[in-house]
Length: 227
Image 1 (cartoon, rainbow, N blue to C red):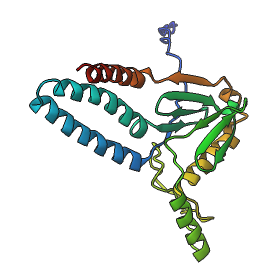
Image 2: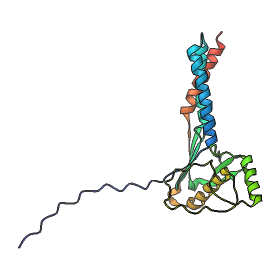
Image 3: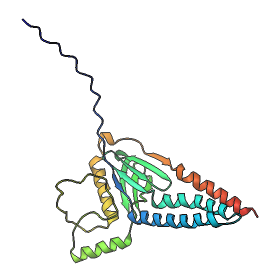
Image 4: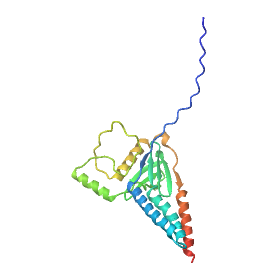
């Protein structure tokens, strides 16, 4: 009679990682393009003044760059809206606001797109600007009977492409910014009562933008005040 071989104990497996929720990222391509152009012009003029300038000119150019570059980047390249199944994160020029879906009350779209939390505080969506021209264009298409849906160029979504894309939806013609707000409203309806989407609103100031701009402004004021 043979004794069965004793199998070594199975190694402890690490706990499975928590599911990661991919963000939908909404930015303004026109804002990014304009910001890149402004930064290129500022770099060209500033570097030229630093290299060829005389006296206080290089210092004034340096201080001006310290003021302009963070501000231009803050208002053009920085704004973005990140949304997933648990929360909405808004990156505005000088603040980052994180709102769990359970803390969101509603979205408003007038002359600007805004989100309201349960306390009634409004936060503007800088990266989703309102275009009256786009709304008028959508209204004209609607009047012509062109009800082709689809995403506009304003929103950029970081999601893996589906191997079998769904057929293009039809419905009322909407401006790109309004389409994005509609998507955010759908996420709010779908996840607003989810227990995992509860929490408090978090607001963080963007000191990485404000500090260099303030230092450049102080340096520029000192240089201009010195005879």
